[in-house]
Image (cartoon, rainbow, N blue to C red; front, top):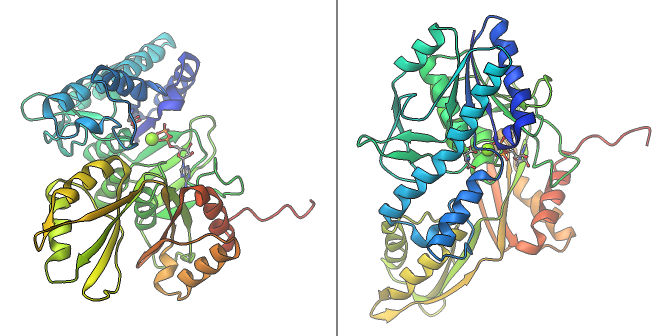
Length: 426
Ligand code: ADP
Ligand code: ASP
Ligand code: MG
């Protein structure tokens, strides 16, 4: 078998953990399997490096978001150096991991993005994979070595180092597994698998044995950071079997699987909390054709991704438009809108970063009515005000005040019966 094993930041947080994970990979290799390891930077290292970059350019890091360095978003020269800097985190853990294998009598070689042939486009800090040239990996595997690849990074057509966005080592691992035709891609992490919601926030969360790609993509995009969304999209597209499991023990975790007819789809499979969105209201705009096109066209041109949109019914030809954007883009979005004119008049813009989004996801929603109303009733019973709502085929998202985020998460988790069955003996 060819196995890709990805170890996340907490799994390689110190030398003891690196030794233990290296021992695990070595056992697999000694059982006769070919092993490609993908490592993240040691826990906290990527944030530390971002902090240094921010300090250097005098940015206080306010405004959360994927790169926290968004004061400089779009500054290509800065972003190039950021990637050059961040990629060192994974280079270091890969080298240490390979040394740990060697010190246990195994044979291993660490390789950075360029050496594994991970070719990406040139979009620094959020590069997309173009292709993988596997010759070097093949040669190392044939020589009987464990390949330890630095995750999260690649190289563009001009030879620049690029990174794949926060959590990008997941995508490196699944992409490598796809390119190599691996039998399985193991995502080894600090939880036992994918849970009905973040087990750190809701202790009654239950581990899910199998979850479909569709549901996992929704959960990942709605705030569950256990897998980077693009890694799941890759897995679906190329049919890579992905197994999310603990790096601390060998028990089965969660398999990410295609939807199949014999699977009974739960109405709701999981609940996710996303704190990284902010709300924007454009007040009193003329309700004429082209208004929303002007607003969202301007934001789209600036590369700002708009999520939920509500346009209120108009009174006297005047209306409000409310929507959410990533919190990291809030200031930029507000600036762009303030500069706009509709029918010659400037826009009045109100922003609110103190919101969060809770989403419930499940394939069974396709065939069950009443999911949204059940969610609203449960929230109302706790006096949680719902500020915005959006639904799609397999999800319902609500925006609430930041203060109620975790409570709303627990309430919805319970309302759909996702928690562990209470202990009968208790
Ligand atoms: P790694 O460093 O291994 O990549 P991450 O921190 O990126 O790990 O992702 C694992 C974390 O994701 C868990 O510690 C957990 O707090 C969080 N998480 C959020 N939602 C979920 C979920 N539905 N199931 C499991 N973990 C979740
Ligand atoms: N080290 C990177 C991050 O912290 C990539 C990863 O861990 O997957 O986002
Ligand atoms: Mg991660």
